Length: 311
Image 1 (cartoon, rainbow, N blue to C red):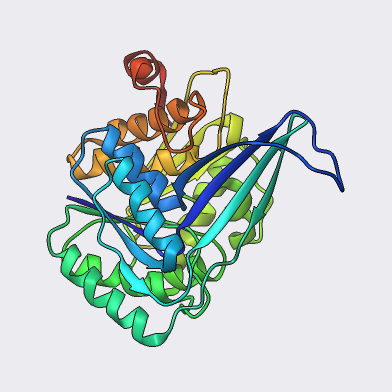
Image 2: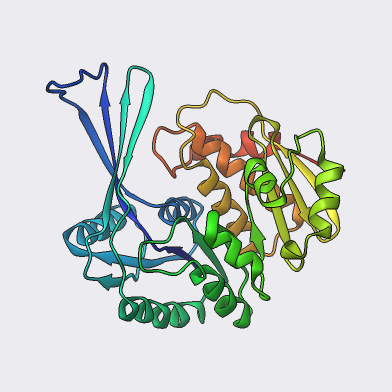
């Protein structure tokens, strides 16, 4: 079973209008999904045929509705209830633009966080892989992901971490490391105090190797936008390039990539297949208008076209 963690889920609401009129009535077409990075991961893993359980924190009427949305997507879930109302995030598509309105989410009490940790420990005992994705809600300390990584690794379960800011800093500072982290090149440059470009991969590799924060991480995968991604794994440097496509909706492609990594790692695949699977999922998501959803009929075509090379 692959366990996905979403600590700050949301009702993702997409409003579509041809032209936004300020200070007037706008009639929109609405679409609602169970959102949050970890739930995007969950949705893709369900498509891939994996045994999945989604967990995290859900609160109020919005939380109950999120449970209904997960049921509709076929995502098994076991969330910890909280008193605060789960958030709603709005994406307004208008005039060829996307304007986002993101609620910060509820405040979590120490008792609620403790109940979640108990639930998480129980679920980890039956997991083959864990993914930790997205932001932490108010009341949850930045070191929470580091604690979740430790629990998983002490249980012998690989754990993939996809977050940023203080939560990532705390996880990198811990003596127990995640199995995989997936920052983008801008985030890596921020962490290292550098300005590397996709043409500086030898220098990036040397700098990462000398930084104690990344020691002990099996997979450091750096996404580089149109330049593909580079993975540092087991002393190897592997460059992945996905085929060019006509992107329909790239939102959630990073989450879909994490799902592909988790799928392959849980299956015991070799390094090349881990990267190929992740990049295939990220690309197929960008081809689909629904966030965290793959155009599965194009799997063989895209999977076969992903190029993996060793530097």
